[in-house]
Image 1: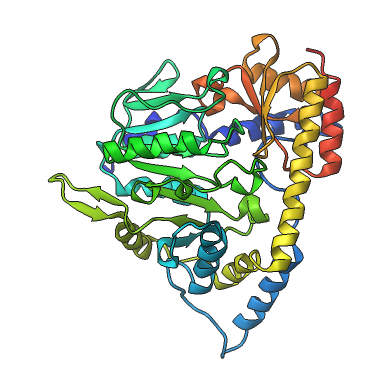
Image 2 (image 1 turned 90 degrees about the horizontal axis):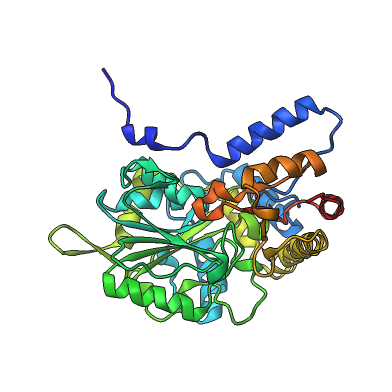
Length: 409
């Protein structure tokens, strides 16, 4: 008799966005004439920019010639892309990150989900609440949690991000081995300051913890005082892994390319207290389980850093930022309180009269034919809140905004 991994049975129902898709599908079947607009799942609407498409075409032509054909590439990514990332995303900001500390992958979601494999099952996990579900669910699968009760898993340290704290997590009272931070945050749209991140880096250094820092939305930061990378914080290269993606920066949601930074100075410890370089362990994991991102895709990602690519993607990001402002104004006009949308593509709104998140989902769908994401789907502290995204087209966002102003609340 083959036994399953019983930790999978601890997972709560289906994945959040699968549940949303099922509900929307049922609504459309019951209302075939409805023009439903999605401001829910964070998928982009704008096409790849010309510089990226041109590079992809050229790389495809190279793959059709014997002299320039590429088979298996290096699992950690081609040097041309890793060096471009190091130069433009880090060294240009006076951050000392080298190309051999960068690992190219097929998505930040995959890397965030897989990275926890490097840590012992007994590791204590701390994560923000509300939280991107992948951080929590993959640790449930790995057996680092106890049973689910009253909206939370045992053995997890939840870091409440509430209106009272401006949606910033507070340091835990006890010890945590693995700390998940996301800034700018999905779902709340809040961004941590340098002073706030310094507290976390100091905590991690004191506790010999590892911070898994998701900065997939750093390109949306408009406040010049906010850090784009945790490595802007002194000491972070001793305690932090950073995850970034081309998905929301350059529209690669369907093209799949991201990268993870693992500084060579970051160490973890075996049961005897002996240190081991996390960079070497992640390289070992990747070379065993991953065959790398296709050459054509990596050439496309490299084009993001060309002068033309930078200008073009910044124009697209500006479009999404304008969408966010449009949504914020509509919510204010409707009498709703909203946060985010300034340094992130997400708007985090309070449901009216303390309405439950899923009830507001149904009201929004039925009254306005607009889809969003119930805050409680991101954690207990998300109850009473709701997430909207700025990633739809300007035309549909404008229409959705007009519908929001007409909500009966």
